[in-house]
Length: 291
Figure (cartoon, rainbow, N blue to C red):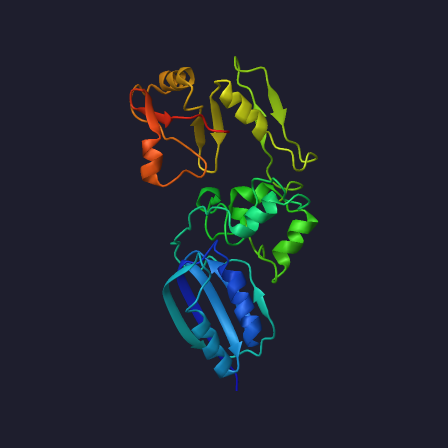
């Protein structure tokens, strides 16, 4: 006699690979049923041999690395003889309250994709998977599904779609999944009165980014507005006093310190000792950065 359970789970369980995790657990345990996002978290129904259902419940004690279960409610429901397990369309049957995960830095696997020549995501800055990438800043509504994110306008190419549908792939149901063929692109443009420059990276120019031009412009004393996931980041070369003063003038920020960025800095004490004042309230590296 099979048993069937309905699970209601809340916490950080959307945008963290939780549904693919549940899918794989159910497949491993030979269980039928379904999993779906809801406006309150995740809903699951599993059916199968009682011992396997109990083992499935025990497996939930080790969720995906980015997930966190706050509440888990389990209810007995009548078996319906279902076969196979599926990820269903999201449900809105609960009151809308959901813990949204933050944007996650690129994982090691995605860094490898980005840095490996020949990889179809080589140098593609929007590389992500279920273990990393944008979350909070692309969500427009809940539950967390691609149509309710800013990625809704980017239709996945056949290769990305295949990854998204493959339970064995780490991009299985990764909502921001994209590549140079079908995803967002990077451009570098001059503002009115700025440098005589325009560089656009079209989708046909896979593997070519305007990073080198951006570095050159920074070295020449220009100020760049870098559009990130959650807004614009203004940048200039910290060792260029004229550029820093111009940025202060434009921001009307006469003495409040700016953030200083450096790649792979040494421990904080050593890093602090290498700084020197350049203008009131601003620190910069004693030696110019190689970038």
